[in-house]
Amino acid sequence: MVKGTPSKGKRQKKSHIRCRRCGSRSYGIHAKYCVACGFGRSKRMRKSYGWGKKKP
Image 1 (cartoon, rainbow, N blue to C red):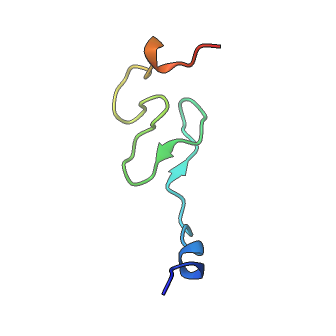
Image 2 (image 1 turned 135 degrees about the vertical axis):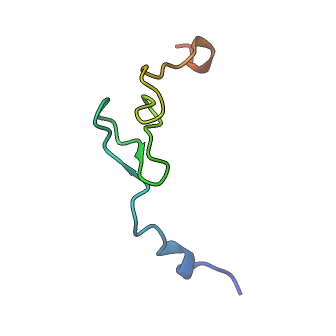
Image 3 (image 1 turned 120 degrees about the vertical axis):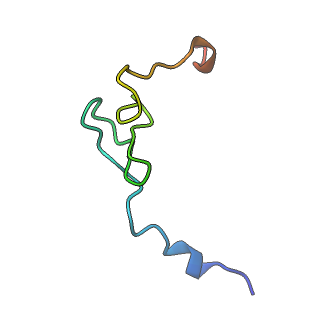
C-alpha cells in the first residue's frame, strides 16, 4: 500500500504566525520565538551573516 491520499490532508494547524516585532510570518507558536528576528529568545535583532547570503 502506498500512502498517497491520507498524507495529503495533514497541516490543519498553523505552526507559525505573524511576529509582533518584525512583522514576518515566522513566529513559532510551539517554540514561542521568531525565527526571522529572534523575538522571544533575545532582546537583540537577529541578523544573518554575510556568508549565508547569495551573491547576485
